[in-house]
Image (cartoon, rainbow, N blue to C red; front, side, top):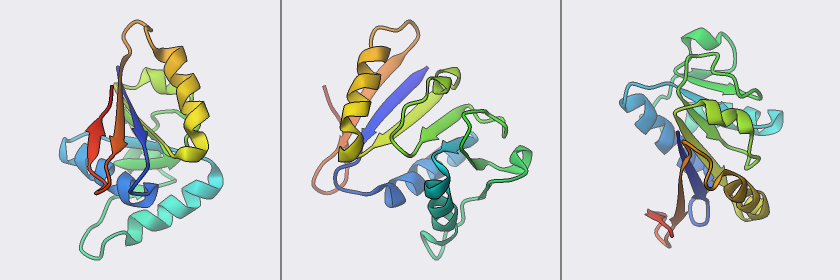
Length: 142
C-alpha cells in the first residue's frame, strides 16, 4: 500500500483536494474522502464550486454510484481503492486501501509525526512525504 503524507504549507486543502480527486478519477479509480462532519459539509460545497468549468462527481449518499464519496467512515462503500484523509486525523482503517493521501497542516503536524513513526517499517507500507514549495508545487521530502 502506498501512503503519501501531504504537508499543506502553501496551498490549502480546498485547492489541493480537487486536484488529487481529478487525478484519481482520470486514472479510472474511485476515491473515498474521510473527514469529520463539519469539514465534510465544506468539502461537499467545495466540490460543486471550486472551478466554474469543472465538475467532480461526488456525494455523501448512495455510495455505490459515487466516484468520489464523502464520509466519516473509512469504508470503501463506493468501491474505492484510494482514500484521502482530509482532516489530518490518521485512521488505521486506511491501511486496507491501495493508496492513501493523508493531508495535514501545521495544526496536525504532531499527529502526522506520530502516524509516520507508527507506520515506518510496517510490512507492505510504502511511505512518502510531500511538502509544498513557495509556489505550491509538491516536492518529495527525505
